[in-house]
Image 1 (tube, rainbow, N blue to C red):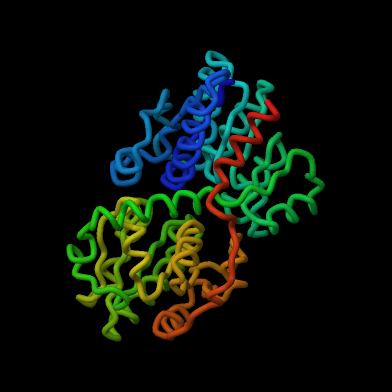
Image 2: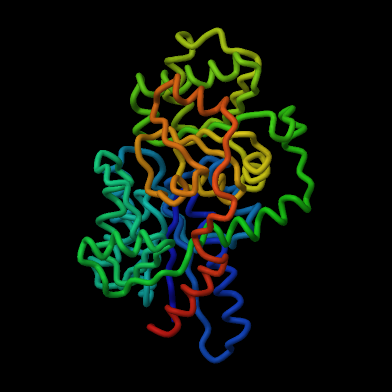
Length: 367
């Protein structure tokens, strides 16, 4: 059996890692029919700190193909992935194409496979923010409606699909990112990484902030409001550390003059590796983010999270009390960041850390 995984962005490198381990374990235990697993990197992310370091740190094998798509508009990236991926799929003829999450690589991979009648499996299916102004929402909806196997992380995701008439091929497996966190945070802590000391951070005495979604970075007013909130928090004496995504860095360049002077307690740094991010998240007092993955990681570490959006597809984090929505209102962001609050310690969601093994077992049975 041959499976091709299509990845291209930082979150997808994390999501594929436990699946690779699950396939390797299956191949060790069953010598009769091994799974051949091809990794196809679209090249959507190509900066070292957003790409190569994740492969090195997570011990991922070299991709079998790198399509080298690079940066560009949503339409450009999707079209280039379609064009370049089709050639690879026609050559390799996999039994299934797996796509992950909600990026342009997700949509491009699903479309390319379905057009040439190769079954598609969507890992992290069924998520909905119900905001079609988000490119990610469009990617999710279309991918789900053309997928043959829909691997859902939560009951909510299953219900979302049912409301849209999708019931065949739907499986509740849990969240592969939870698999990755459980495995990786233990390694990160054993390595005793000095990332906190390097950035002069003390546990539970700083706020971690990440911002990368186009709805925030491409809107000058929203981006200015969000960074104004970071300034306000830092001016209160609480350190704010912002690992800066390349897209945000590019958009922020024109705003620096309007934001100056920046307080010394506002630290804008280069992107961090996955292990470094896990350690900084776990030790933060509060996390401010527009990232879906970081919202969940904050929840799993029981760190209060303020989401810099008006909605979230990860509603369980809000229901648990660990996540609050603030949009781009600088006053609300600041008040929540400075407030001391905690969620429900017993609230549990997103599975048991064995989602990847379930996916492999389902595919082995069905294919």
